[in-house]
Length: 441
Image 1 (cartoon, one colour):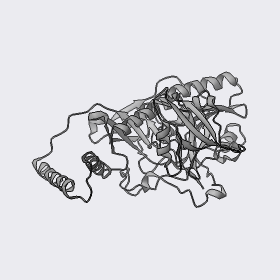
Image 2 (spheres, rainbow, N blue to C red; image 1 turned 45 degrees about the vertical axis):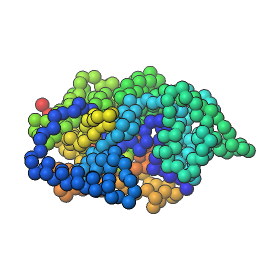
Image 3 (cartoon, helix red, strand yellow; image 1 turned 120 degrees about the vertical axis):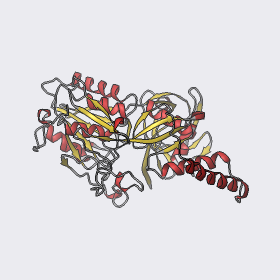
Image 4 (cartoon, one colour; image 1 turned 30 degrees about the vertical axis):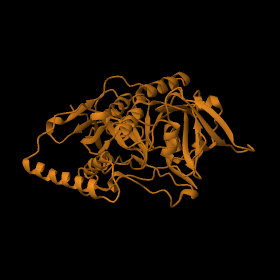
């Protein structure tokens, strides 16, 4: 049995939350009324009673952390308290680099399976191969551990060694490999040339490195393919869970010369913020197709929504996740942090994506392979308990199946995009025409 829910970079992202994140300093709190403080005294009474009489001795810090999280999770699915460890994990994710081994892993048959070693990393140099099964970490069995627990054991300070016991197909006995941890820079954007004439850009997540990686990818594609032969670009945002808001804005701006990219609106009208594109389209106006599916959330929806509304790109695929809220990270004492939903974001046309998602210009379904039928279901923000309602109480329902085949030949959505760019297919929505966009002044 293969568990497909998590594909994890050792030392980096473990179940990265779908989010558009901004960082904030602590702001002064508004004093509550006297009745609120009287009600808080009840919490103190309950806390003391639990400490004194619960069947086993609880830990005070765990009780308080659980109480805080109970309050926050009652608001919406994305607000939460992060202790020092969780907060550091979040910072690691957004930095896009970490101390680790340099392998992408998942779980298979209760063992950690290496899906890919990253080039020029300690794991690759030590001889770890794709398909290797890690059975022991520093002599201790992996069986019985969750993927996140196994990843945590493989994390560590730069320069420290770790011993992996590996089961490899064709080897007559387990292989023991010692690896010294180092700083791993995670590529936020992967790129290549398809069919010799189309630039393919896959944005994996929105970290501090995303725009720089995207720019490098576009420059490399332009260097490899003459301008008169380059048909355009595919911007693949499928399975992208989101990330930093400023990076979503920068990625959108890379394809735009003008127009509002996104606006965020908080609880007070004066908190509304608008973010506009700047002159300079890095792709020189070449046609762009954006791919989305049910795994495209938040920051990736900002990009898809901006390029769609401003008619800079044609969106192909299935309805996106529908997470249109912004989480602000507020530092707290002892290196913890509060992740609090503080605003909703709106596309250039003024549409909130919250609970509805981005509807593609051209709907192209990606069928599941036989082995996944009945095992993968459509998911979206509108299905999450306690989610914030969008513009309409009668939401259409967001999300769709989040599956991308590992082989390009089986990728119906990508091949449809390639056929459009190469003129093998036609559609009224392609190519998009920015001159027909209604721009806000």
